[in-house]
Image (cartoon, rainbow, N blue to C red; front, side, top):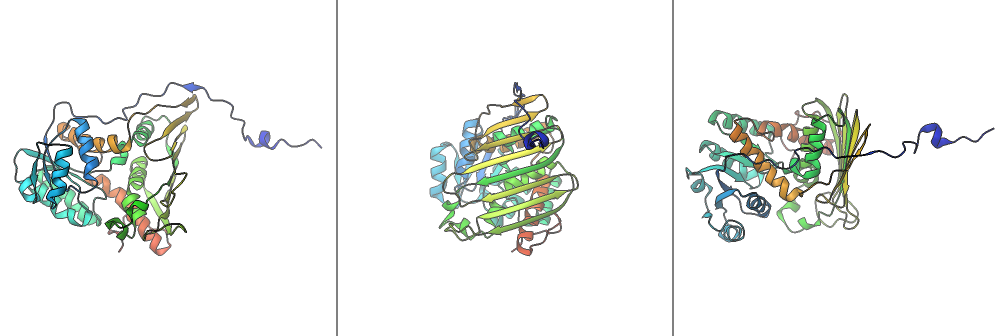
Length: 372
């Protein structure tokens, strides 16, 4: 009896070399408005504000006012980024300025809602830090309030403009890999920096505060396709030294697609970040040692593209979130990261957190609040 060539029979390793294609030129980089350069005020000068302000400084945006309960924090941010900005200790004083048209609110979710309400009532366009809200109905009410006042409310889901994620979104929208059938996000990183900070008190740190970026990407890639259920679990890693569980996974199930998320925030060595998306006409893969260093491959029937992407998540991501809001204001349209759009991302996230507590799959939208 002749020996069986398993690889030959099953097609393993028989794909052959792929033709190298010129990478498609896609508009993955942030797009600034053509003529609109408003005065911007930033409320909240905590740790994340550094990334916001550096991105705005690099983009040439006009930040004219900074507000913080800590004069020291505000003075430090002004000295480093916008030396001519005015300082306020009460956000209501900043909102009273007629020349400020756009405000960036970087405070924590629990204290952010009244600030957003006041900003909307003052006629300001708002970019809210993520996660947007801890209650979907409150988020919906804020979106309604902005509509009634005639201003735009967007959420700083900056991951959408990370170079590799932005290229993926545009490749999918351009039909380069067909219709999404599955996606796999796998993130292995070191989140031990939270030790001794307020973030260590966030029980659902990985699925909620960190994971919202990936739930938002899942929602963006699905583009409104109905999600049947979300199943998730969390666990403590044997080597972690901080309080909240640093291991988490979630499965998002549609009738004709599925998305998996896997997080390990306790990887001190050999960190890895990988995204793989399968479509009906091809696939997309991005991989690297962290969120900013990514090598991208896009496989089609004609061959493989390896675009050399420019930029990083922490620069282009934050630039892109503000740029999209400014373009939307200039073009009089809803921003793609508008509040209503973000509620789909939050619904996935809340369902995952609830599932991790109950051990049961949850239908997105049925859990209206972030579980306690």
